[in-house]
Image 1 (cartoon, rainbow, N blue to C red):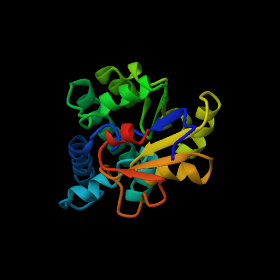
Image 2 (image 1 turned 90 degrees about the horizontal axis):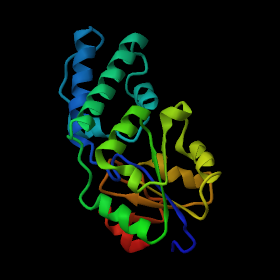
Image 3 (image 1 turned 90 degrees about the vertical axis):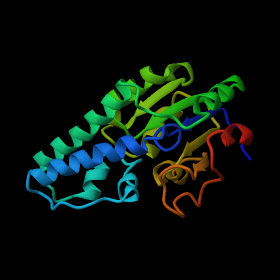
Image 4 (image 1 turned 180 degrees about the vertical axis):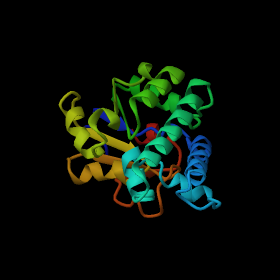
Length: 217
């Protein structure tokens, strides 16, 4: 199915990195700040209501979550989430899915070019690069903040200009799979990530463990 693939573009959160608990913690802290500022009512959040925002850029998350929130409050809440997630990575509290690095190494040894593409800030990307030594596995690392948080399918143009085809996109959200709607790429959807039922239906293949990616290739 994936004959001819030379470059694999991988999402990060929900694909390689299990950001569940750290993001839930950061989200609840940010929402508490919004409540204390008088811009929202207190409420309990189910985990699934929170993790559904993983995979969105910060800009897209707030535009969809609380579009009418005061801009100054939104900025402060967004920065609070970012700072907490950054501190978690810097203090060794980030967790990769079991077998993630081993899978990257195996694909690298098979001769694939590996590219990191995440809806995250540069500081977040660099913190994880340092924490897990990601530069040992990835030939290129791209974060959406460097491109003013435009969609991944637009950033892919920059990747395609540098890395050889054919291409395989691997991710857990529609933002990853929709790259194939704009470019001639193959896709693998990660069902263990944060996507909703049906969100990955158009993927060429589905996996329930990152280690299955090595089996496919």
